[in-house]
Image 1 (cartoon, rainbow, N blue to C red):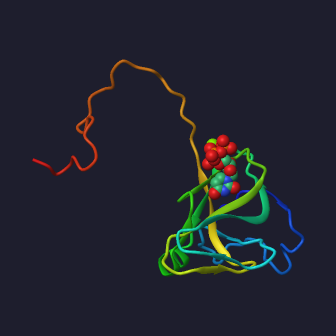
Image 2 (cartoon, protein in one colour):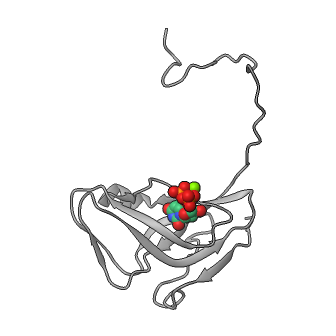
Image 3 (cartoon, protein in one colour):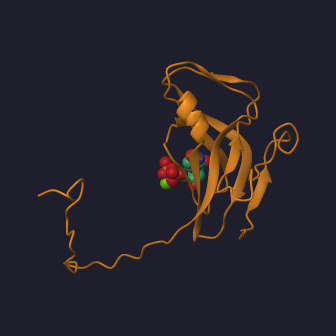
Length: 153
Ligand SMILES: O=c1ccn([C@H]2C[C@H](O)[C@@H](COP(=O)(O)OP(=O)(O)OP(=O)(O)O)O2)c(=O)[nH]1
Ligand SMILES: [Mg+2]
């Protein structure tokens, strides 16, 4: 298991106490659960979305890495609680508080409790592109076919 050191700042004194620090749930976990660092429970009506603080900031620093905030499958599937931005991308130079956009796409009101695990953070490799402007590409079998073009006669 390879591990990457990442600086983390605790922005709320309850983190590490009544609200646990993010931790990998198992040896093979890809994501760390992010918790709602709320003062009190918050209700989300169907269709409503809100930005929820985590009480943490991280500084990834290494531009060959990024953080991705992804929904938790149980919350998303069973309760319709997903991300208002669908996926959150954390830049390696971002130093602000990690925020989770929480969207109730379900049909019933959902209560977000203090410390509830809302989403998960995954560290992913990134390669930045250096564009080389050309007039034409070398031909490929696919060419400009897309959007269901394969398997059509
Ligand atoms: O779910 C998210 C998504 C983003 N961010 C933070 C980290 C990220 O580095 C920064 C900017 O995100 P993004 O580039 O996706 O948003 P933008 O709308 O393009 O804002 P900006 O103009 O600040 O780049 O906001 C979060 O805390 N949570
Ligand atoms: Mg941006």
